[in-house]
Image (tube, rainbow, N blue to C red; front, side):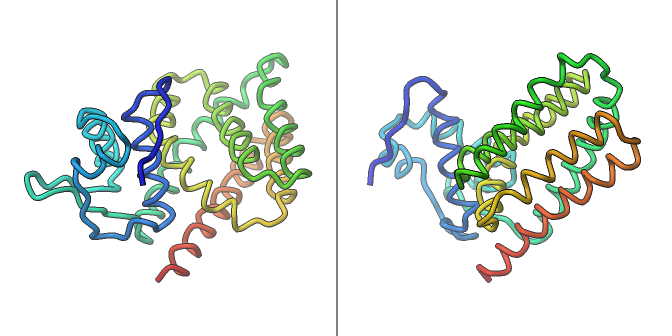
Length: 220
């Protein structure tokens, strides 16, 4: 089946996004072989965007390129999930500690808007809208940190965490608990103590990690 691609976003990024989703969801099993030719045909693009996509996924450790033999799916193991969430925890704890120094109320409006959208998505049971608002919330922590290199590191791994969240959020039939977690996190960031905020963030990320590990265990 031919996949359609939009002509706005980079073609390579679009191909990478679809393949990343398939890998994280377990639709492409570890060890499976894929080829540039087949992908180019499926997505109706030249090999250039396909190579760009595979280069990005290789950086994310989701595929292994073995030219001329082909490209092999690496997938996600228990250890991969641990590494990803421990990396995110380290990055986000630093971002949070810096963001809490921001006293200008106007700079917190984007995060507050993301919290409001999460609440609306939870009421509507709209998982896709919730994912978008959730990622915007966490991206705002990095924006408030005023640390471009730290924000750059987050953006590098954002596509991977987007795919992970799209999987883990489906474990939550009722999204209100997750929405409330973000309300709490924003409150402690604004008025709480750093240690309290760090604990709330750690528990939040640990919950996401456990849901992803449960997903992998179910597949096995």
